[in-house]
Length: 189
Image 1 (cartoon, one colour):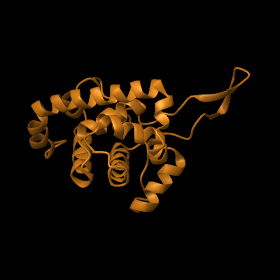
Image 2 (cartoon, rainbow, N blue to C red):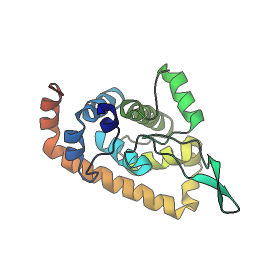
Image 3 (spheres, rainbow, N blue to C red):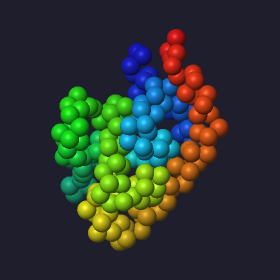
Image 4 (tube, rainbow, N blue to C red):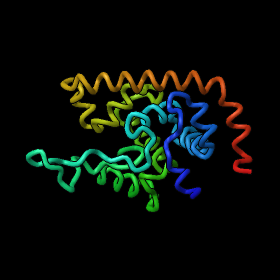
């Protein structure tokens, strides 16, 4: 019963402080990623909110044939971070994190931090730049270099939304971060 509660999305996705008060282990995982890779917590949250709405088992819709849903999906993306099979295998191979699961919050944010680190090193995108980090996340590093997003007005709008959410989460975290840090050490006692 406890495990099923742990995988439900937060009750209020509009407020970073409430998300982490409800799920203190998420704060610890996000803080670890921030310290390990330098990806700000607010950027992690904004990308995850966009990709999966914080649903551990999020998956794209099923493909259709003549209007009839098929058993396969339009993409292999899965989990909190909506990572495709090949990209997830690349992450596990390069990090040695063979036990990582896309439906585990700590693994999903670790992937985000790892991917953002590569985006910064290879593309020069600041880890604080939620807009471009999201575009590189969605389009892949080659797609971002080729600016494939320029032909996708809808995606540019989504990236703006991710950026706005990251800014909102950042402002909220400035007001509660110290309390979250000091209270997380004793959880769940």
